[in-house]
Length: 374
Ligand SMILES: *Cc1c(COP(=O)(O)O)cnc(C)c1O
Image 1: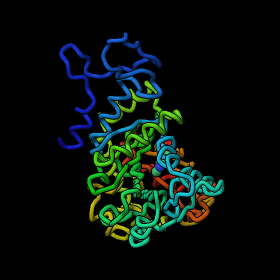
Image 2: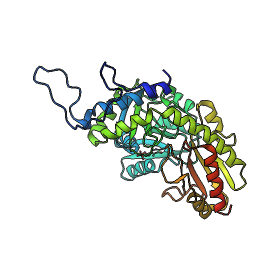
Image 3: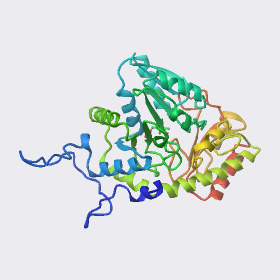
């Protein structure tokens, strides 16, 4: 089954008279059997989840091709991967990962829990070296917010000891753009708050573990049980509902993003445009090698610098001036105002392209650029 079909088919009840959708199950607790009863499948929701959490895990597991685990947020999922490491471990992360992932890594290092190496997303040799020397190698591609693409096929195929975990934050891509487990990664993480959920109405995160790594899956399951990051029932239900239209949304948004990236690049009011689908993007060659689409995230510099970019970002009527991404509704914001993102160009706007009509979006961009006197 293609991922686009599984997004619609996966995680549904199968028996006659079953509802087509698993409803949200409002229970923290399950009735236990007597002394000779059957094995217990569900006991307590923080541990096993309810039927709807299980359905979401089946659904996302099939999309990326592994065993799914669902969390209350993307950061709960990411923290689970970090927090299972033994004290004294070494970790490699990108130079500019998602800011809360950077904080997680840096704070753990400051506390003496592990040491952290930072690697440029495009430095394939750097990643290969890290794979030989680190317990956890955390790749994020496309990376936030410059949209650099790592050479995933080369990194996933590189030699590494069995104890090294190669994790990929695939949030900006979705399983319809890249499938790291099929290339050989050990675990994939998505903030389902973004494209998987797709409507900016929930918080959720997922890990999908390679089927060849049952011990890793078990240790992540135990870690989640202890830390308590299991997803809530209603958010699991909403996540499934969002994923049903994943292909429609992602396909539309990626097509629109390509058109808008081309138009922005030709516009004299705009500086550098960063979109992995543009031949001018520094890592376009990596992207063209394995990405099935080029994603729905664009970053561009407003000529005129930080203040002009802030005026542009807040002068829209259709595009929402908001921080998050991956919804049917377009959002954008100036990124250098985020703490820890000082390396980001002052006038850079990160744009999450939604599903509105491309001409309406372009009209909005055009008038916002004009409002800044650009
Ligand atoms: C949003 C995001 C996260 C964190 O996810 P939350 O659901 O906000 O906790 C991690 N990585 C990337 C790339 C993200 O965009």
